[in-house]
Length: 500
Image (cartoon, rainbow, N blue to C red; front, top):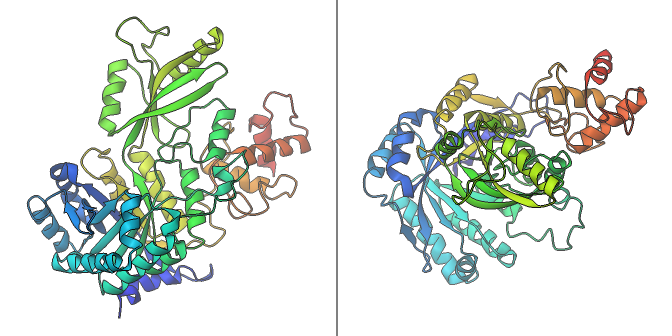
């Protein structure tokens, strides 16, 4: 019999029982170790293997002939000793095979002979190297190859025996958020991934909930309405939307939330009226941001969605920039650039850096537990991430070895007192408290169903919450359109909420 009838996975099945059942699933942590930093990756993870459920050497890429290119020399040190240590700790060793070549995927999978050959090759490769399984990371697939990929997974699954089939899958943003403010194209639901087949033939499904950028136009619009810089690597509000959508088809006991440990640097152009256009320059590890902060004398701050951020106006080297940058806080350069552009009806470029630190990673782990998924998959562990991540994982492991499966009405965090001003973009336990109070009255309800509805309150103060607050203020004569504080939870609004 296949491994799916093990105690751990049986408990996973029970997590979908009614809310009154005392079901629980073991919370798992996996992490990718990139071949381009094999020495620092193995050195980074080796002392912390006790905190890992699985390690994924990010080493193999798919050749045009359907064989693997070993970019990391897995049969040599430091991998040999690392793999032996992982096995001694009973940590699963499951390497990733990756390709982003959609044409290659089509050529291999659309032909039954080459597809079957690939299935046989992978199954034999895993068994010959005594790995615990394989992680399939085939990105850039064409929608026309949806059924071919599903057939490939089915064939591979049948051949793997007691070895694991893991699947790394692109995130899927709800259409009403992706196309917020625009008509949804008629072909918007034509996807390259068959979630039904993926749920059936993948033992774990790692959702790549990172590289968000501007894919969620609803969140982009909310930030723009308050003239806030918004270019997250992964906003928890977006992650929650993605997982809520995915979990309609894929069992939560299989879902792993992808967590990034790298950041992005943007060249941002500020135009008059607090308008910003973002251009990605490159990714970086957190140490780079620390060096930039020191170089320009800026102090990083925490963004509203939980990641770290800073901005600076880069000197061209030929003349002084039109805006002085010394002693700036994290976003003062952005504000100064916007002011300069508005006053002169012109534009100006500045740099914006955003990255996750240990605290924001802890936030994602807490979200994963609250959503009741199997665990988290971290990209990447190579020594360049915020080293505070290991304490975060230690604290998570000590807090509980199992995660209770939440009921449908479970909230991400517990109730909290309303003790601060809350406005568009705010996050926290007190936002959930606010939404719960508003949801007790049909007139001020956040939503009748879905996210924000009674029992599905969130920690994000978005446009729907703002609209509900305005209805509350009008109902109780606190504020109306045109008044200062309309849509903002200030002292008077908090007092009335507290009385309820």
